[in-house]
Length: 202
Image (cartoon, rainbow, N blue to C red; front, top):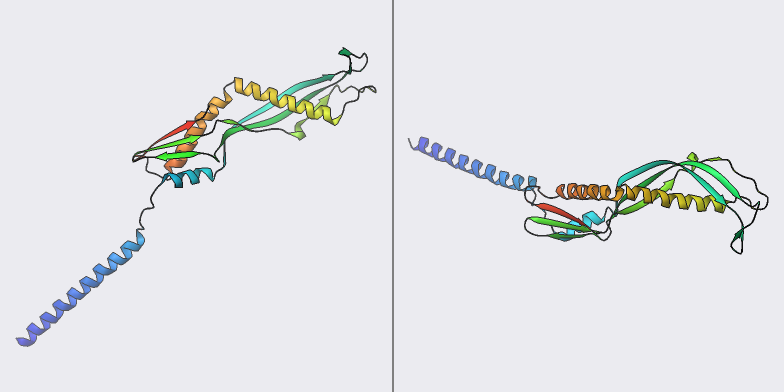
């Protein structure tokens, strides 16, 4: 009887020890598999957005025809027989977005406000391989130069930009910028916990 009681007591002790070991192991490995949540701060969010530097969200592809014409002038008068001109067709691409290098983020308990600079045209390039020149004059008194082509290209870019702005290209870009920044923030924070507001300067 004593042997039986002694055996039962030993078994109970072994079981208790095993339970403690399993419990402690679970606490240890459980703690390792669930790291502590990193605190989300205004500084961290600001840096995350600034790292992008420049956010281009809109593209404007165009195909245009333009004419260049120029004559020599003397005392405000056009010199006869000095006109030079050419006709060009070309393609280009314009991109618009926002510079994020100076973005500011303000965070409260349940709201995040992102403030950015104004939306602008980030680039506007004419594809040189697409350029075709027609009706190019050959005037010995006023020859066409490389400067003429560069001046013409610069003027055409400005013309396209004005056209795009008139067609609300920047307004549409601003809407896309706000959505893109919100999506970026919601990759970091819980959408149900925070309301995100994006303010774009005018």
